[in-house]
Length: 85
Image: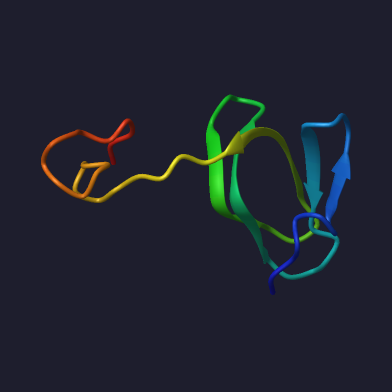
């Protein structure tokens, strides 16, 4: 099952979200292009999987940076990407 992060989150402050799975099944919560951090400062991005009847608090850190598989931002070998895999 897939949940929308906006429908299953509870805003604590403007950047904090408590994402809740109120169902008896594991769910996938797509996080879109946003980068979040959990309370242990671990990055959370892409898709978040929540076990049944669990929740997770995350803090929105803005848009996730794009990472290029070859390490080059420009598509050529002239400049390294700011973020590497």
